[in-house]
Image 1: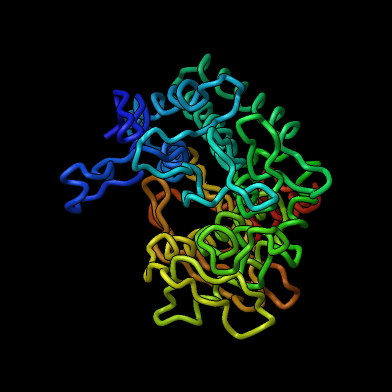
Image 2 (image 1 turned 45 degrees about the vertical axis):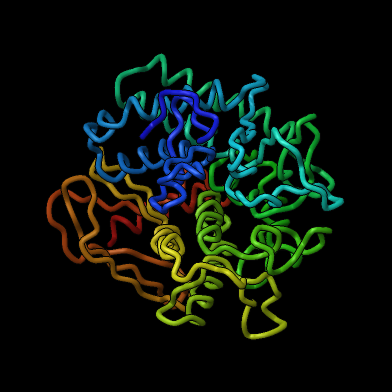
Length: 416
């Protein structure tokens, strides 16, 4: 369903893929554009990111080849129609008369606000979209190398590096100690402090020098409710703890943020978010967290407050928990080398974890992770079928892991 045409009614452009496909009567009668609606910037870039993730676990080049043309056309679209003014950033502007105004992670009509509470007009570039674009280009550089297209690999990597340099120059707000939410049509900063910046951490677009301040800002009382990172700072004029994107907490977003925190060595904060989500799940029947929850502080009551029209259950919230396990265990799959790099950091409330029949390339293994009395975490292979190597090593980009940590981890791998 990748588009090959321009169709304003559905916000189609060559290379875009749909983010909503509905089969209701209004869609089938073409009274709304949702029979196949394309107005989303995140979905196309996530396709590229997911393709790289698939390869990292399977090592199967045929999976890349099958989707290669789709991925290339997505990045062609991002570079052209995604950046119509050619300023090096992605900006969206809805053309459909019945389309959604905002096309980033937060797609509600009032999601992007100035400090005075007025809505930012289009075209709008939000920070997390630049992060997704950065990650997609970096990963496409890697995939291009796998496919033997080395000139393209260099070009994608150079483009990503240039984007990161510009981004940290133009989107940094030193007064807030954070990345701003967006740039408006006049390229002025929309200085709201939001959860969107957590996506930027996960994507790796924020420079190392800014990361500690950004993480600290996310866990300030106006952002961290105790159940998760709020979509908008409680000190903002537009904050409402029961507003869809202006104060609530989204479980699926917390897993993304936790992944980014571990990627760069903020282990304590990552575990803090993980515990908040597991505690939150325990409040609901069958552990099914609603689509989003209220942003009320955890210390005020035993519940976060209920968003009145939340979908329950919400499948992508269920997906948050495998990602949290992935994060706590520090998985870094390298299927092409039949190797899984791990760096388990288990909290006191989860001292042991066994994963059965984890698949890597053509092999599978059952792995046991445990935390000892001193607080350090270890791994052992209980059963394996095929070649499945396990190496313990902190994330490559960790800001906190030193040489001694890496040597110790290697020694632990040999011992167990």
